[in-house]
Image (tube, rainbow, N blue to C red; front, top):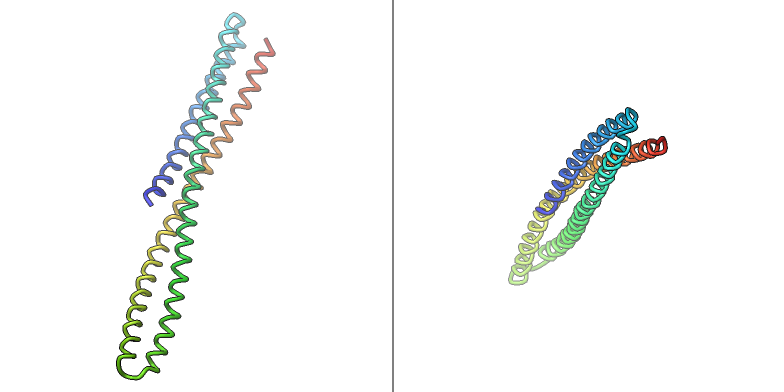
Length: 192
């Protein structure tokens, strides 16, 4: 479960990093705006300002690659969480089947004990009944623990998915900013 906890913490941390990247994108866009204003103010500084625009555009593209890497890593973390959840669910199903088997066995043994004569045969059945009851109690206890684990893993996965949606929204904003900046750089370059 420590892996699941670290996965959700990673996805949340990735969301925070994506938001920080978006802030850097906004700052880069502001710098691009200043550079664009400078381009329009004077022809003598045009080449330098266009270079500055291109550097800022390159920064935006780098930020986009960083977010894409974050998305890939967060996707892998959520995949691990999903696999853990599926494994826990399979174990719960197995445990429920075992409980059903033990319950059937207990029923058969109880009927046999009722029909057995007093003596060693009944004592043997009583020992078997106690053994099955003990196994049934352990299986039920294990099922309760597994159910708690499943619910915790499901909650962690849901939290990761929510954080991931935030990362995706940030990525879309960065991509939109890059498209706008690209069009602006192209327009400025053509205008010269």
